[in-house]
Length: 490
Image 1 (spheres, rainbow, N blue to C red):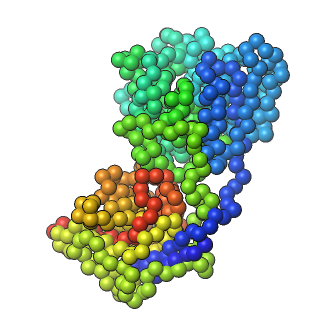
Image 2 (image 1 turned 45 degrees about the horizontal axis):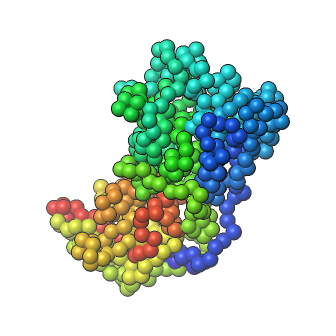
Image 3 (image 1 turned 90 degrees about the horizontal axis):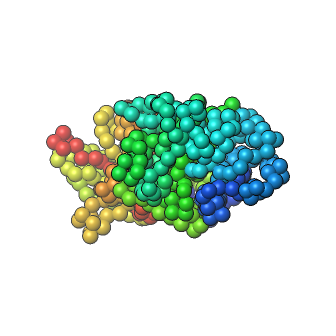
């Protein structure tokens, strides 16, 4: 592995190229996927769920298939405790008393559980199971089983009105709105997105205790719905265990939507461990304009998954960093766009704003693909700047306008460290940008950036800020030091 480094900037920089795979990563989390009975085509959907989970490189999935309807359920006795999380694609006859008890004890003692779509139709007469899923449908469920939970007037309400439990209109694509952007599952996805054609479950009922609704969708009456904002993604606690409940995933088409795939993967990891180490995704994978589709059977491990240990910050104390700035002049760098001035002073690159100038960029003359980069930066109070990575300046694009991913530099508390699509028309690539105080005003701040394949990670002063997966951005290009335009302030 070759690495590079740069001293200062009001900028100071370091950088790394990866030349060969490494033996990296923890042992995969063991997942038990349960199926065997379902009024949905489990023989088709179980392989899709398995493929989706294993494509992350995080999970190793075993399948436990129950006897067919009318079979001897006493023979169905999975060893749940061998697994970090159980994913249910099951909707059928009750399990034996001993298996049901073993499963309830498994979750209560800290095992993870994921309920997929019609799994919440199961076991209407099993109190512990209904506590686990929070809300369920069909199977004779009604007001005796608990309230409806709806999002009305910017808050969740528990509706105890009498009525059936479980309904859906005709299948269609629908918008899902995240109601909690801080939870580990949802803080790494856009605030709204379209699910592929699916059943939008409505009128689910249940105890709904120890439950948080992460995302909802509007069940439009024009599609046969309720006219209510219905829960789509939920998390619950059951004893020491964590439960992720998704109502999405009716069939092959719905499971081919990236929205189902991404949320299933993130929810399963959270249920197993209480955290999500997968990168955030941009609107390139979860769009609010149209459903993004991928064949689950064709999913592969992420590009570059074996080139870096994404679980930790790069070691800037190691001896194999290579300088890309010589500390004395701007050899190997050239300015693109704008009227700002750049010079070297005391081993640092200093950029100065100019009146009525557009954004200016001091850019490396070399392009870089997979790398780690570190620099120190200090900016005047109130200034907004950034470092372009893997960016381009093309004559055919806005007369050479610099464009590509930019790691934000801004005095805090603000969005420093998040990733913006400079001049791409995409705005923020980071799904959410909650302000942090990682950037210290009037001080030198150490940035570390890792860009491998479509994944970008950032740290400021040792604090992790962003980790995104964005297949739409360039995966090779120059590094650019931005001086942002300041209008007539100079």
